[in-house]
Image 1 (cartoon, one colour):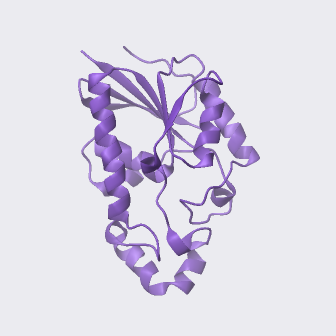
Image 2: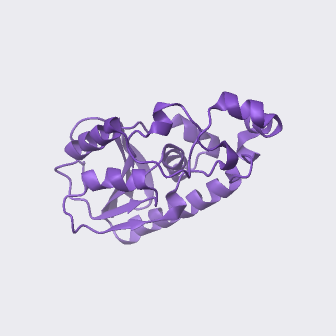
Length: 208
């Protein structure tokens, strides 16, 4: 039997989170609170042997991973497909401002976000397709090469990864809101996925 673990960590807080802004591709650093959140997650995972680290290309994910990895020489792989959705002209604006500036596009988003496109941004189907590719590849790698893999990414990405691993519809991604300052764990036993921990805030001990 092959057993792999995926440790899923959302990046720590940024000013975009703090101010309640729409943002995805904007490359923001962590706030002081975000750094504390990342350090807390590192303490929860301090006893875990992590074999591989996979992160998005955005600095908030890299900063968070730097707190968690056990050695400065520890290699991690950046995958741009794990980047958060690109919200185009909506980036770094509050939803009320977006609704006023781009009423038609905003209404399309509110009424059918699974098929909508933010103004000059990435459509949700495009976003979902690239995350689906990663989900499929990671599941296959877990079967072929059992390991503990740390994934540091974003709320939308992580929720979508979980929903796709469990063969749920894309809208189920919002049922898995990965919180900052916590970690979640998905287990893969011979390709069968289970959610062992969700938004954990204590030291993790895997069940083998």
